[in-house]
Every structure is written in structure tokens, then in C-alpha cells.
Length: 551
Image (spheres, rainbow, N blue to C red):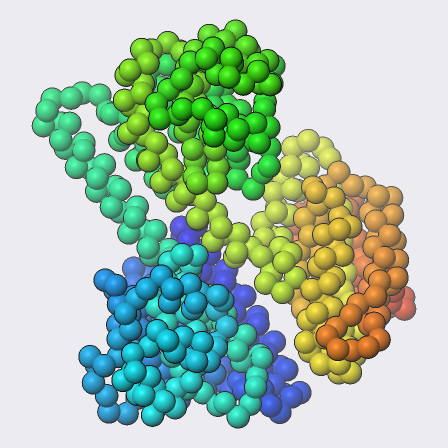
């Protein structure tokens, strides 16, 4: 399956976990507004990403879950088409005229509805709804809406009637999760349409070149060939290599801002650029804002206007790089391209065509990365989720094998989350988990991978760590949590929490990812059986009773 399909499957798995958690809580709280859930229907949801009509299948299952699980008696889904939101799906409505159910689209409406996926009162968008449609919704008892959107793209709005006698945060959270899942499916389809359009343009351009007797492929076609690259930083390297090859440039250097970085990076071709000084992103922005980059400028000219960067410009000149132009990767990611070896007029003409294509390619890759990152993130704590943890553990163990290095894996969970939930409610427990995520981000190193494994269980991958390092960290984390004060809402006293931790080290305790996970989990069980609020390194000689660390 493609990356986008795995994204949907990953999010579907998250929905499965959340739903069964919610249903378990329903048995403990009589006022949960969720009813039975069909595991078969979720099986269809997991498989819906495989077909060509994934949006239709996914939307159908989402609608079924709204009816069967969230007890929605009436549903309207208005999809955005050609400047209006038009009726696309309905359930449980009484007599109505289809032409009545339509809302004019506007930027103000999109901004208002796209504040989040949670269901909200229709009164929030009443000013955008025509009076006759508002009256119809009132007559039908429809009082809530939630959007299907991604960033600036609004794909549609659901309007629902459900049991309003109960204020049910869990039901609303489940509905919001379904909305987010469907939003990603729509956004992937939108991207696929863009990709198909670009590939059609590439095919048309090839046919045109063939009919004119051209034997070489134009650089624009080479750029369009990169359209399915999903990693934005690796794409940059491919773009620069393509520019150098197709424009026959002897030397080329590209200074740019990598995604999610505040530091500039440099790509050099044709010369060894290891000794080149790299200016800060702020300096690059200053050069761009104070210089005329409609076309190209000479390196020597810029050096006279920006004496604070003279050393860098002198280094470029020493490498024979004579010309500079702006080549942004997106509205937020700057780029400066320097080259030598060809007449400036030709390069100026070619680059004026390429700028828009480079931005489109980069934006496309960034968007895919953001979708994938969301599928790797636990929404409650902001940490990585189990899917990302599994992927990274395999990668890190592979790296350790190649370089004969060690790696520590730590599993830990909260000792009495159930007691917090019983005394203060589940929202207090959620807040405790959220604050635990903050502690972990502040405690771990930048090279560590911290994830919420499930429920109240967390895991940490610690590269370059042996048994003493692992034990020292577990002791420090145990003490930090025990000394922390956790606060929730209007609860006057601070909540207290302790954790039990278990650690295992590669390759001492296991040489395969699954076996290392098992070893760390068994160490956690050993810690719990030792009285909790303690830590243990895996000891295979100790017998452990019980089923799992989270039980």
C-alpha cells in the first residue's frame, strides 16, 4: 500500500483502540452516549483504504458509526462544490426539497467552521446559513455540526441530531475522531488529483516534444518526474541534482531552510563545500528582503551590499560561483541558489519557469509529511504513538547492528491511574497523562524516542545507552514524577502520581525488536511485583506472575 493508505490504516487502528476504551468506560458510567460498536464494520473501515473508492467507503462507514454508535437520529452532509456547500448525503430526514439544502461558500464560513473537529452548536455559524435552511434544520431537530477539512481546504460539513439530554465529552471526542479520519481521506484524494493532473501535463509535454523531434527531455519534465517524492528534504537534493544536470552547470550551491529546522543547510555540487560557512536563516532572509531578486544578481554585487556576509560571498567567489537567485521552497522556507558555468540570460529564463514548480513539489511533499506525522502522534499527550514507536525501534536496532552499539528500551506506566479516574473523573486522568507527556519531553534527550504505547503505558527508546545509563535514567525519572504536582481544573489540591519502570538493553537482553519489547515489559512486571514506584532491569531468572504490565 502507498504512504497515504498506511496513514488511513494507522488512524483507523487508533480509532479502534479509542472506541473499545470508550465502550469499556461506558460500562462504568451510565451516562455515556455511545452504544454498541460492530467490529465487522471497523474491519471494513480498516480495509477501505485499499480500494479506488476509499472516500466513498470511508464516508459510508463513518455515517454508519454516527448512526449506530453515536445515536445520531438525523444526518446531513453538505460537500463543497463550485462555490457552494451542496447536499451529498442524508439520513433520517423527513420530507424535504433537495434544492433547499445549500449554503453559499465563503472564506469567512470556512474560517469559522475550521476551528476544530469537535461537534458544536449550529448557532456558531447561523449567520452563514440561509433562513429557509435554518428553519428546516430547526424543524428536524438538528442542532450540531462538525467540519471535514484540512488546513485551508474545507471539504464539507456534517449536521446531526443526537441525544442532547446528555453532555457527553466521550461521544463528542469519538465524533471528532471520525471527522478527522474522513478529513485525511479527502485530503489524500485531493493530493492524488493534483498528482494525476501534473502527470497528465508531463505526458502531454512529452508528446509535444516528440512531435517536434526533440530528443532530450526538458528540465520541466524532469521536475514533474519528482512529483511523487514524499520526503521534503530528500526532494530538495533531487531538485538540485536535476537543475545541475539539465542546465549543464559545472558548479552549483543551494542554501535553504530544511523543514522543521531553524538552521540553514547547504547543498554543493561540483566542488567540496565542507569548508563553506553557512549563514543563519535570519541572514538569508535579510539578503532576500534587501536585494532585487526578480531575476539573478552577481555574487560580487551582493557582497558590496551585505558586508556582514562578505566572508560567505568571498567563499562562493573562490569556488567560481558567480550568480545568485532566489529559489524558495515554500512561503515559509527560503532558498538561495548560486551557480557558475553558463550565460546568465539562459539560466534566468529557465529558473523563472522552475520556481513555481519547485514550490509546488515542495509544498506537496510537506503536506504528505504533515499527514503522516499526525498518524504518528498521540493526540492526548503530543508524544509519538505505538505505530511510530514500532517503526523507530526497528530502525534504531538496525543501526545498532551495523555499528555494534547498544540501545536501551524502557517501559513504564502509572501506578494508580484507575484511582485518579474513580475519585476525580476520567478528564482528570487524561490531564494527568497530558502533563506526563510534558515531563517526558523535558526529561529525555533529543535523540531519544518517547511514545505513548497505549492506555497509561509509555515507552522510551534510548540510543547509545547501556545498563548503567538505563538504570540511572529510570531512577531520575521515577523521582521526578514522584516529586511533581499534577493539577486539574478546579480541584484545589494537587494530584500525586508514581510510576513503575522496566528496562532492557540491546543486545544484552534481546537482539530482535519484539523480544526486546517483551524483555522490557517483563522488567516492568517485575517492578510492579516489587511494590511499585520502583524500577527494574530485565532479569530472565525471575519468575513473573500476571498477564501484562498494564494489567
